[in-house]
Image 1 (spheres, one colour):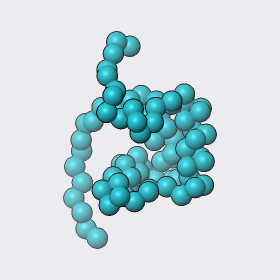
Image 2 (image 1 turned 30 degrees about the vertical axis):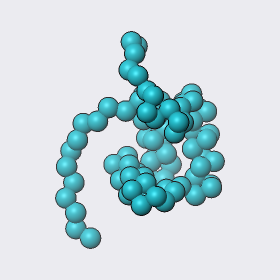
Image 3 (image 1 turned 90 degrees about the horizontal axis):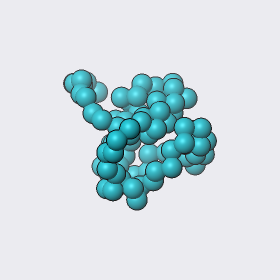
Image 4 (image 1 turned 180 degrees about the horizontal axis):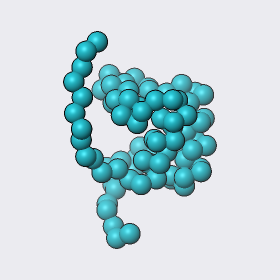
Length: 81
């Protein structure tokens, strides 16, 4: 399928980005491809990850100290570094 991609600049929580980059590397894909896949699954109400991948994500979250979850998504406030 032919698509058009554009470059974008988005801001993402630092630890979350580290987990996503590590997961993309683990799956041998680009960060952009990973984010596209997650978004397309979410827009259809489908889970983007298998149980095995969720276990890998849990390990990466522990490594990078990511303690945020879905419930935190609408409560994040950018504070001082």
